[in-house]
Length: 263
Image: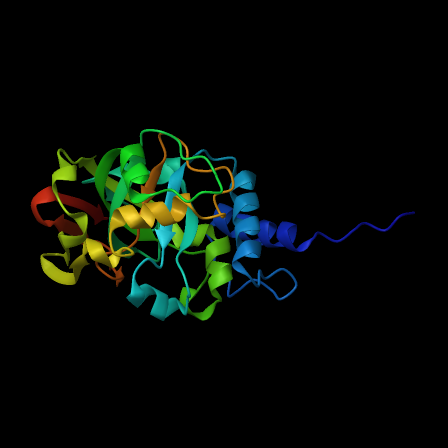
């Protein structure tokens, strides 16, 4: 009788993350036997994890686009994470406290693509990226994790776990946004009226459009970026861990505001 083969590293990691996702539990870490050691290994786990969930994806989030975020996570570069379509909400939504226990909050710019950006050897230019954008949305990323303490696991483990994306809260499309230099837009995050974070569009790799360009040129997106996908371009406010019942908002200068409440 042939002995049953043990699961490979990717399969084992996906099984553990998928089980945690399904029942709402957290992991201390992934065991050494299946822990991704590089970003390439992490993306392989992330891709298989998303496929195992059977949930339609809505786009991408980009993490560590700010120097402060890279310093906290000891990252040398940004990273990409998948966003699930069922976890994209409209501004003003009230979200149950237990849905995303970590309740990490970040104010971000998010783009919806009007045309696909297929993989190619020649890097996309800023002009090509801007031309591919259909809409700009003001966004709050809800950061959530399958780990008990995300600060105590490795960066590849975070990337494997959807890049720690819990959900996106999106405002209406911003009209005439191309009139503005997004790098100069001031972003202020408030909780219960108290300022809990602030920054500028420049915190996202110098300009949110450049963060989108980074993703389009990154081999992590093996199939490219597809028309209709939304891409959240990284925090411009820093990270805030909100409390149960918090009402959170992010104001983007003249562009408007996006808000959510936990309840």
